[in-house]
Length: 99
Length: 227
Image 1 (cartoon, rainbow over the protein chains, first blue to last red):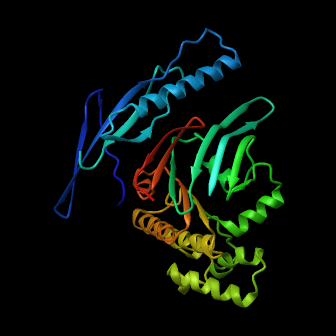
Image 2: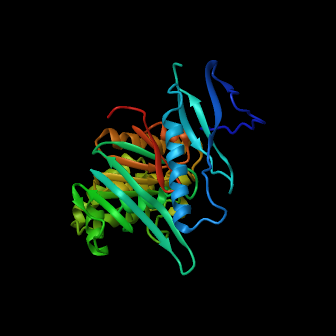
Image 3: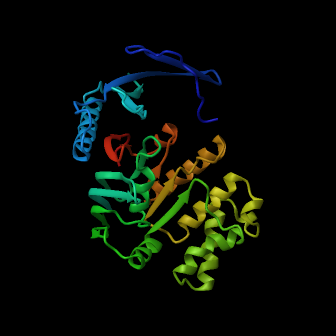
């Protein structure tokens, strides 16, 4: 068995999910947190194609910056696809070993 | 070994234009093991197809061993591909009508390797993949794990410098998945460059570097081990 999916309800901002795994008496602990980064830029009501492209690039630049400035003790595990029109994007982090 | 500069891939239909890759800059060195991750539809497989010379980009440059290949014709791409790249797919992509031996022999046939050499090479790689006892069987007579071992044997029989793996453990149970990952790691330790698309953080841990794609862009690269 390689991965186990654990349902976690309402993991809020600044909350950390600690998972302690015991296999054959050996304990390993993992800490996860979900962060919300901004995922919206100022756009006119009906943007042109060029404006949409620009907005998309700006969103990506914003995401890159948020990720690169994040606490180095945590490693990025997964970026979740935001819903259409969402103002934030969720990113899953795991605490690095030894921290 | 591989370098992309401002790589763009656009898929067009009469009504819709989708940018699958948007100015992707990526460099992969000989001997590296790189995992590409990201949500479905972010461009992972499109990138792998271009790196694997199965498709041309719509824009930008792609250097394969120092040669700019982004505008190569299909025949040029095929010639470069068959002598340099081995592929491993999630669904194995073995030919059901051919035996295990014949499936693994196929890349050598395309390269016009003489019959006696083919036999030696196929026997050796099947032995290495611990599947030689099944060489006369057909793919449908094998388990998923065994089929993927055959697919890896086919990918490495011609001794390629680069292995491209698209979700190689996606259809396998955990034990077989770990075995496949160990095989890929072993090939990498022997000098083969490995580029793997995966959704599995556990599989990605085996790589030197994890590249996160999102919406056709590389958003971050995480170095796990120094080459």
